[in-house]
Image: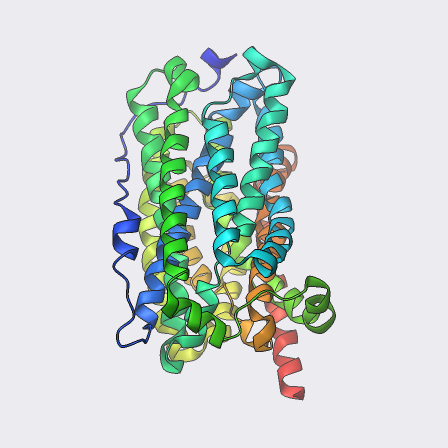
Length: 451
């Protein structure tokens, strides 16, 4: 059972990330002469996205290293991991519903009430997981509670949409929109580095029984604290008179989802599909390889997490480069080019993952860099299609659907197919995402030429 679950939990340490007080930074953001600069908006975007992704990856890594052993000890390791990934997907299913419900709350009670309630639900859900008794104590009720808390996280993340990414896209200088668009995307590799470092440190320093009994809970305590502080910081930011006036002036307010679907449904669909390559790649270089190594390799898990942290550094560089490239060649051209490169990369996945430590390291490092280049422009690359009054709600739902279709079931599908039919099916999964992105961009270009 738990004591024999993972013989690979050993080796090099990783340094846990340290997160400074977010509120002290955002509390000092003030408009200069009544004007809010794009750089100030970017601070709120980066802080918010980093905290969300840290929480995201804490749960993702625990889904591989912890949950199969402590919540599904009655199953063999592969089946337990697949069950864990199934519950992992619940947040992606719940997120669009959270967006719809909280948009209505904002329409009735205001942005501050919406973000406050989202903060409460997110904190309650994350803390609930941290204190949740295992299957050995509660039996099937523990699994049910884990699923409920995971759904709560998804609902809260849908409700935490503050409109700052859309505001940043609108207010950024036209010649620098690619650069400003990538800033919020930095949250993904940075959040992963902190989460992976924290788990690598715990895995390396604790015995396996201690890690599975109590050590895994610590990252959830940290995630709870960071998300509460970060969401309060964003609440303070968007509730200032300057930001409220700017959000209202740009018509960044909720609209009816029914009206949005009727008027802008095509743009929502194109926007979601345009990000498929990036979002499919997202889990193929983070969660999936960790699960594969954990199940089928004697390699040290802490060592592999350190390699993934190094890959995340390359991911940060890729995101930064994507901003420069997009401002020179256009955001949609950039997204399409790197989608094509992901298609090429997909053909080499089996050779690299089965190529020993050198091949696996190459897969992680190259994959993260390519992910950064693509993901840096994945959010809102076609959001300009939305009429201004629909951009606030449209951008939120587009992001939710892109995550759901492109990434929500990626670990479950990739691990399940590769375990039963071979790593070649991971290539097909990545290829399908790249094809989806290229098709969506082609359709978008054709529709734009008609107008």
